[in-house]
Each structure stands twice: as C-alpha cells, then as structure tokens.
Image 1 (tube, rainbow, N blue to C red):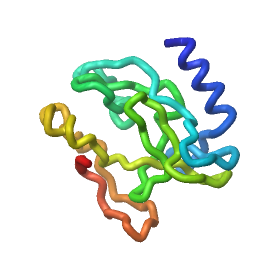
Image 2 (spheres, one colour):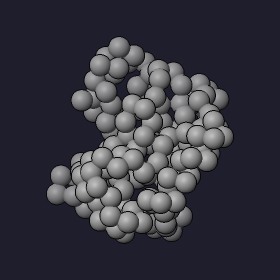
Image 3 (cartoon, rainbow, N blue to C red):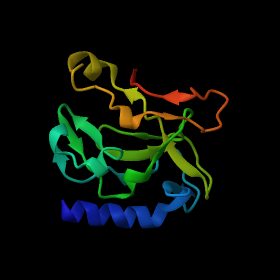
Length: 153
C-alpha cells in the first residue's frame, strides 16, 4: 500500500492541490486544466469495518466493498460535494473528471450517489450516518438544498 500511496501523491502533485474553502474546511482544486477522464487521485488507506472507523475519520470514509470502509490517506479525503459534480469516484477507487475542468476550479463529487445494484443487494450496508448530512451551498441551479441520503442510480 505504501508504494500505491506514494504513486498517488506524485499524481496529485501534478494535477491538484488542497486549499481551504472556508474556515476549517478543505477542498481539492485543479492545479492545471484537466481534460475529461483525468484521474487526479485515488481513495487509498486502510479498509475497516464500520465499528472500527475512528470517530475523527467518519466524515472522510468511503466504501468500495460491502461492510468495509476506506479511511483515505490521500487528498481524496478532501473532495467536496457538488449537486452537479465535475468528478466521480470510480469502482477502482480512482477519482476522475467527468468533463474538462479549468485550472483553479474546485473538484467535486456527488455524495449521495450509490450504485443501484449494490444498494439493492446490500441494503443494510447503505445506511446514512447523520454526521454526513448538511445544508448544501454548492450554488448549482439544481442544488438539492440538503444532502442526507443515498440516491441509487
């Protein structure tokens, strides 16, 4: 895992940087223009059962396999939500742009997205922790207003 994290940090250094969005809140921004499909970081870190996820990491975790939660040690931990995201998390843990992204733009994903097939197969895994809920301020004309559940697609 150390080699994969080192390779991801090198990838990140080429494409993105973490910056403060608001006091105490960090986001990921494109250092350079990124064409659609550009992988800019990966969700890498220890995979744990929910009961072992440290309290301080709950807001950063993501799941790539039923009943396992990845605590990211890469900049992936700072990707914020957008109701009209410009990036996505792929099943292989890559974060990639959905469309061309200009330098200086914050990269966002949809926090409420869930794979419909996995959601139907493992409904008990797709619980929503109330600590993940928040009033969205993405500014999109399609803003949902409140992020508080998965929306299987």
